[in-house]
Image 1 (cartoon, rainbow, N blue to C red):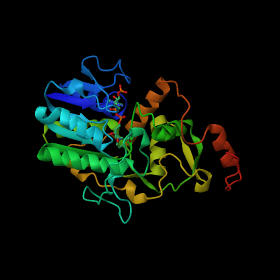
Image 2 (cartoon, helix red, strand yellow):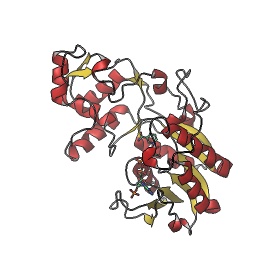
Image 3 (cartoon, protein in one colour):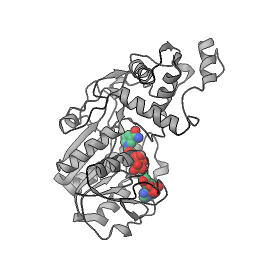
Image 4 (cartoon, protein in one colour):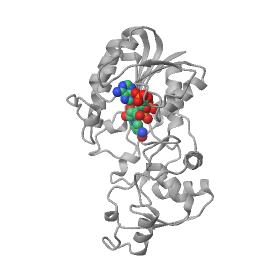
Length: 325
Ligand SMILES: NC(=O)c1ccc[n+]([C@@H]2O[C@H](COP(=O)([O-])OP(=O)(O)OC[C@H]3O[C@@H](n4cnc5c(N)ncnc54)[C@H](OP(=O)(O)O)[C@@H]3O)[C@@H](O)[C@H]2O)c1
């Protein structure tokens, strides 16, 4: 099987490429050559730039499937489809659960949940924000489905986690739980939380390509539903520590890793993806692997959550405004 991956050298695409190579696929990577240039020496490399619209390197060759991991704007996806035409058997577009409307959506929402209106006006990826990221993906999805029909496959991941994740959202909890003791939680420990091991996403993509399966698939996890408190305890179990969760006022940290106001966004249904072969890595395994990866890279400063000093101050005086953080 010959697979072209647009992207493939940072986190999500990297896992997809590793899984495809593991399955014996012949993989071609398309990117600028800036990220992960040392990765995957066994894959062929094509150099181009989706910002400037340089797809010249895609003028030759044919593939059983293209997996578009680096497409955010309809312009980018349209140009890639123009360049590839019918020289790809299937177009797999990595979208996001951010395409869905949040209003009026309850637990167990599936792929038929109404999407947000498409946005086509954003020109540069850097200009995307919370208001336009999902709607721009909506426009991309529509264009891929219109062009490839039964040869289109749309994958909508929720929060992805695992080794090489530089968002720090899950790594924060893995690292914090590994220290054990009293853990400040500026949210409700009963809040449902969905995180999917990026390697499970990669396994799903491999199966969808191999089975030539069309359609739209939510890619959320873990298979065993969990809560924020359950997630932190799973991380502690993986590290062999004990934690005591201390709920503190949410006002102390309005944006905190994996704390969400809209609980239904954390209760999406992945039955269709499971039936299509979405693997089910246990959360404790993902936590153990992230812990090992984080230690191996030397535990650099994280971009979110409390520092140990901030947390100690909050735990000493948890009233809003009581601790200076
Ligand atoms: N992380 C999550 O929780 C999550 C959730 C839902 C959906 N997603 C989706 O996952 C995808 C992002 O994953 P990722 O960044 O980790 O994927 P990735 O494919 O591992 O990394 C991004 C790739 O895009 C290439 N790239 C960046 N800018 C480019 C450009 N201008 N032209 C050509 N290639 C370019 C990079 O290589 P060069 O720098 O060498 O060009 C790199 O290979 C997105 O589609 C996102 O919407 C992620």
